[in-house]
Structure formats: structure tokens, C-alpha cells
Image (cartoon, rainbow, N blue to C red; front, side, top):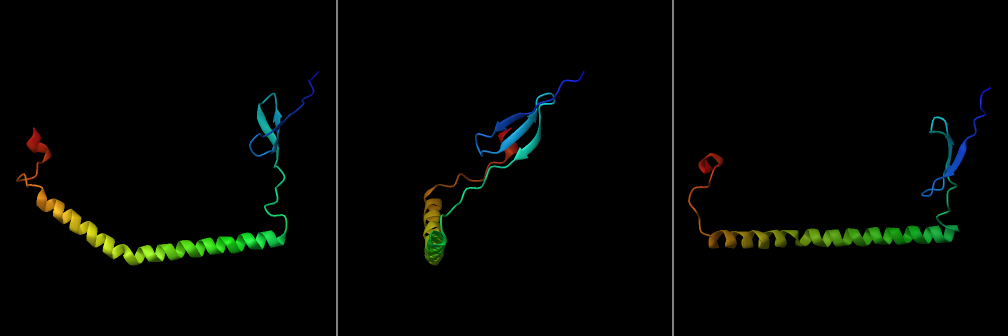
Length: 102
């Protein structure tokens, strides 16, 4: 006589989903996703969260715009500093190539 197969029910510790596993083949034969949790309790809370997110996006955009305005000055200062450093370091003549090291 054939043995009656029973499945093993396992709850995922990470997401809470229910997995049915066949012990003979050790394969997942069914999956039941965990119930979704509510993000917000009511519409007022959801609209407040959306408004706050919109304000944060606007703030980040303004900061990005200000950084873009100052970017030319920053690049010019970096270039002047690199030029000054290049003038201070002595030239060693011709640059070394790989086959010069042999």
C-alpha cells in the first residue's frame, strides 16, 4: 500500500507567507502570501504623508538647483588648484612607458 502523503506547512519568518512543502520531494507545492498590512489608518493620514513627501521633493529640488548655480565656481576653483599644483611639481622629463622599465 502506498503511504498517505502529508504536507508540511511552514510560515516564512521574514514575510509571514505560508508555504506547503512536500516532504518526499522537498519542494514547495503551494504558496499563500501574507496578508498585506495597511500603510495608513485613514485618508487624512495618507494625504498628510503625500503632502510631506511633496514638500521633501521640492526641498531636494531647490537644493539641487542651488548646487547647480555654484557648480561653475567650484569647477573654476578646482581647476586653479590643480593648475597651481601642476606648476609646483617639477617635471621629470619624458613620461615613463612600460617598455622603458625593462
